[in-house]
Image (cartoon, rainbow, N blue to C red; front, side, top):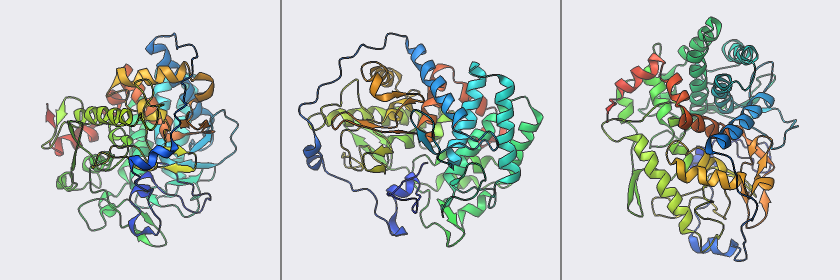
Length: 450
């Protein structure tokens, strides 16, 4: 997850904390009504009439992936391998704050880049070794978990950010993908060391569900991973641990609330669309179900509902169309927010204002390909000069107000990179699911052929 910069570097929050700040003394983004959205609309909006993208879908996905690979290569420390949380969309960024989640996506992207020949194999393997050496031997950890944000060169904790259970899990997914992909004993040994030392029961903090994190100054966060969202990876990594596992009953401890939107019923909290993408980037839930659901099919339904939700706002935000939709946690004109919809009442989450977030459809390529690629083709075609940058698409933009983000975010590029590859070849699913711990976890959670 990435940072919320509340006009300073003093408050660094996860996406989940944006939605569920509760007892932390900060307010979550307001849930606004559709009526209040209307005043922001631009009835004179005219879509750009630039030339459409003329290449094939495969050519477009390859362009996107090559550009994203460049981000993970250029905007990481060659010494430590730690990836920047964000960078200027056209490069030449001097910021030094790294996100461990971005590093997890980065490790997986290095595997994809090697598989596709985006750079010399020896160079990529050395970068992976350097990354894992730093994580295994140099970067501070507590019970195997890492601080959310660190200095990319020194590993020092950034400000007073939290030790993060979800961001550590995203990092571990990247670590385990690299372990299976690279036939290199040192890479495999380092990755195993990093995973095996994680003390999962410690993060339960005496409860049945995982805490969202821990601060040295104040202890565990009160917020817990207790309802369906991107949490599945945490529980599965913990179930499969050969050294510090949690009981299989933890899989049943979190709730699975349901939403019905325009006739589509699916499991979801009041959360943005990325929550239906992240665990699916690595764990292969296709053609499987547990006692509760087929989670892959659930994400397909959630994506369909999200598209319908965006299209339902066209009278207020005339940019939304079959060719242009998708809102996920991202930058917006005032900073960073967790937004989208629909929520349980069928309305928006956060200050929806007509912005477009490319990773919403990029991360949905594995679930609703034809609808998602149609948006990406539109962005690469008519919108090209405004939204396409050195590292693929800007994090967000609003054509109604002529606002175009100057940054890209590592985790948002990462989910697009991984889901594009999973659609093309299933490569990430194939490599990650070779891990015997992942296979064991899904058995313990009760998954069976659907």
